[in-house]
Amino acid sequence: MPDKNYLPIQILHDFAERIERLNIAYMLTGSMAMMNYSLYRFTADVNVVLELKSEDAKRIIGVFEPDYYVPHNAVSRAIFSEKMFNVIHHETAFKIDCVIKKQTAFQEIAFERRSRTDFYGRKIWIITKEDLIISKLLWAKDSLSEKQLTDVKNLAKTGFDAGYVEKWTNELGVYKLLAQCRKEIEE
Image (cartoon, rainbow, N blue to C red; front, side):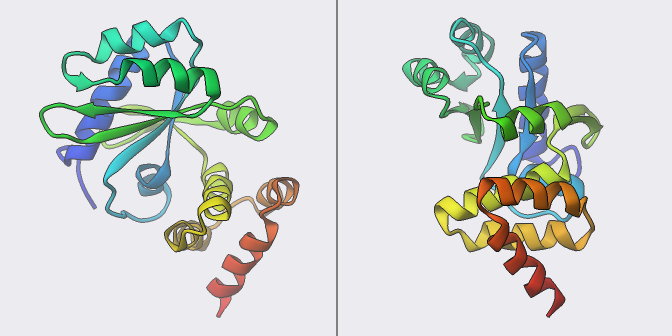
């Protein structure tokens, strides 16, 4: 397992400190969040969901520059379209995917359920294991990524609230993918 000196963790800690300074709500997700629940998997970036309003674009740019490359127009476009933008740490070229929180029932609930957890020496807002499983199933549905399904299987092996996950996977149309992952775990 990595420690707090591992570059992605250092960048995440710095990112969280800057975002918290702006009082912007966020949660860690993706493969870095997996490290909290399951196992370490190499990652080329950090994925963070942010709750941003249009007026936050200038604040984001101001708090990250000049230490990070921040594509100015991409920030505003991402907020408006509820998509994603990246910030890149200049010194290391490490990338942070900043996903804008969508105004959907699942995203609202997932954001409400996030928890503040000690993540290698710093308190970080992190997605719950169940919501990470659901998110990875949604990504797998759209991308057909075997890596996402492998992540789901690894997360599921360590236990989860099956009732909650089944409810949301049924509602979001990814229950078959969940069932497939559970079947493969049992084999």
